[in-house]
Amino acid sequence: MAKAQIGVIGGSGLYNMPGLEKAREVRIATPFGKPSDAYIVGTLEGRPVAFLARHGRGHLISPSELNFRANIYGFKKLGVERIISVSAVGSLREDFRPTDMALPTQFVDRTSKRISTFFGGGLVAHIGFDTPVCPTVVDVLAEGCTATDVAFHKGGTYLCMEGPAFSTKAESNLYRSWGMDIIGMTSLQEAKLAREAEICYAVLAMVTDYDCWHPGHDAVTVTQVLDYLSRNVENSQKIVRYAVRSLPDARNCKCGSALAHAILSDRKKIPAATKKKLALLLGKYLK
Image 1 (cartoon, one colour):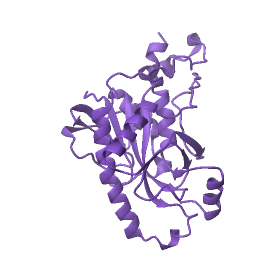
Image 2 (cartoon, helix red, strand yellow; image 1 turned 30 degrees about the vertical axis):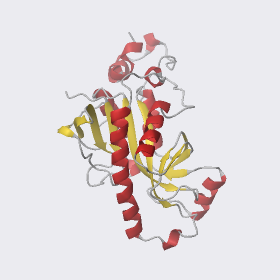
Image 3 (cartoon, helix red, strand yellow; image 1 turned 90 degrees about the vertical axis):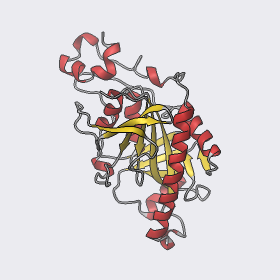
Image 4 (tube, one colour; image 1 turned 180 degrees about the horizontal axis):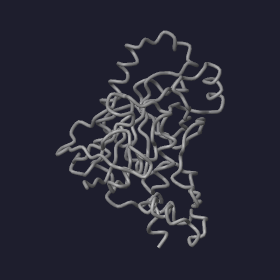
């Protein structure tokens, strides 16, 4: 099977990765079902990269329908150690303007229908999630924004809502009162599962619009939003290429050992079927 070092998840508007050389489609079977699409595996900036369109090419999968476990497991099976997740978001702050990039370092979960763990079935594990994104990847993405002259905001909180409908105005104002900075529908589950898979993860959040709290929200046209999204996608591609080129080979963060002290279950009593199912993630801890 093809191998990759860095994974890129493309969100709304980003369904391919220009510059990916010697690219080929790789379809991966997982114990959790099918990923969103085939992984496009090739070389970007001289490094092995796997790209996945989060919603499938053609944008066919709703946020609540995404098979987050299969998507992250597939990256793990390809050997990916770091994931850059590109995601379109709404802004909950006046100074987070459309076409800006946000690099959130915290999340708040407002979803209700999603599975966000690989564990269960006789195996209990609790990862640490106080720092939900990899600081190394965030730092390199920030450098990429600076190098490409794109306005960005490092830090802040991403509120992950269920969707697919957008917020009511009351909800939007509530989230602002909580101190939330951006709002989206996808990244939290990816971050949790990437941590359980011991993969570094960070979000490059493309601000496409102000959420409905903003007085000018109703005046924004679909044409304007599509224009903002197009500019964001172009900028995100440049930033991702910078990050792929600049990420250090060695991982000195804690992401790669997230499970070292997470397993609470008695190893002798974990069902054999569960051990087999999770061997890719936990094999080194269950020997």
